[in-house]
Image 1 (tube, rainbow, N blue to C red):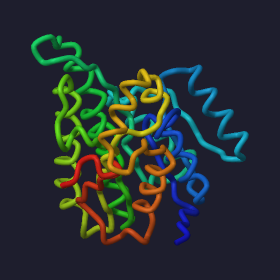
Image 2: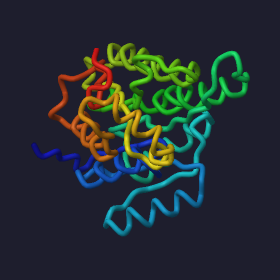
Image 3: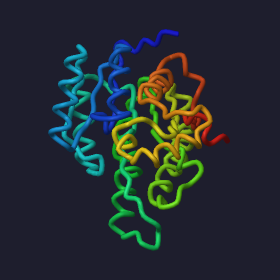
Length: 249
């Protein structure tokens, strides 16, 4: 099934590496005008070159997703210079892993602000435009650990579970206006971060995955590109698991 997003403008947060970069690439290949934000200049320039080498034009903005006014200004700039935002993929996220009894308030707050507060900062200034135009796609990147929990990740799993609560509520608010809101919960994906894990630990993780391998960023991006298309107009408020069978609900 061919996915055509020609004429659509997409904003992908945290899109300069890993899963985010794969999402940007597939959305652009499907015809969307893609924008993303960054904090790390060196990483952003490497990403921009990668997209240019692939013949893709992706607009990048230096904005921290925890900055409410900065996000609002970015949205204004995108809509003035690229086009009204039709697609949002909330992909930005961090981990600060430790058990709760050792966790500092700073570690808790950092994860909450980047993983959860960013949903408000990005979606609030965009959603009214989507509903007024009668079409929109919002996809929130959650996690397998937001579904099942994980030792040492009370902060992270709280944000990822909360992300789906946000998804279900907003989906109900905008469903009759042609806007869908869904979350995608990847399992363990072969990103640079996961591949940096010592091999013996990585093999133990893979042993828990029924399909016997890590997922790829491109597989996650393919699901998201489909959800963003007209073909997925009857899917909203869903949490789609992409984890190789590691956690079945």
